[in-house]
Length: 208
View 1 (cartoon, rainbow, N blue to C red):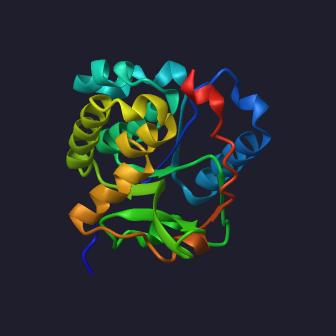
View 2: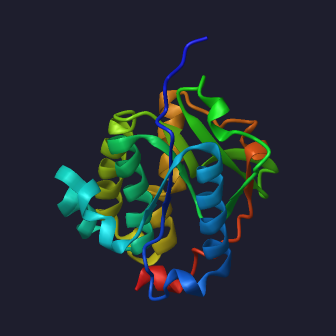
């Protein structure tokens, strides 16, 4: 069976939005769990905070800092990091299943998380879990830059800020890119990672 050799990096990101990570007990607890999981399984755990961002921006530094909202930067940063070093990015809402080896999914080129859409009553592609090799997200980065420029030119998104975020670098833009690339979510990912979908990232702070 073909192996795509996704680097054994587990990557998590927290950028301060007025509150430090200590104000989010779930995030702090899961950070500890993923650190222990990585040590147990022999993976490299990489936690990226505000002081670590610069090394991953490269030619996209200006675009990154020109983004209006922190949440946009969190989304875009995960793509930049994965594209540079490869591995599996995992939201801090998620908890590991210690009984299973996440990197047993190596035979897949992409490891993609999902979320349950209550309106459509089905699972859809999500960007809370993304696994890939170095260089595999060039087209996604380019796509998000184009979508951000398109959205910034439309007055309606000055009011609909959440939609601007979701459709520029967020999950809706990611979902459209996956459709273009004929990529879908990894069905068995829910056995390996417990997604609490707490929504604790969300709030008015991200739009200030």
